[in-house]
Image (tube, rainbow, N blue to C red; front, side, top):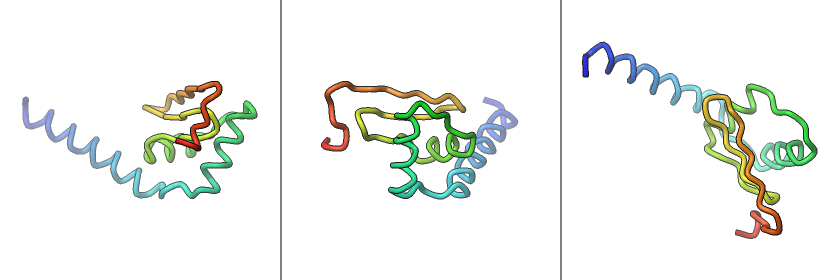
Length: 85
């Protein structure tokens, strides 16, 4: 690997880490609001997507929500209460 390639990768990682700290962690109320809105079929904003991506993923209400590179993935598990797990 070239030095230029390594510098580019390191700067991309630093940018991702700083975005995560700048967005702040999601509170329980914000997570519940996002889960409710997704369950109702409402869309998420870009900032919410970035915060979910920084958080990792959201689990609750029979679904797991994750965001990777701006794409939202929702996995629904019928008859499985994710809050109880």
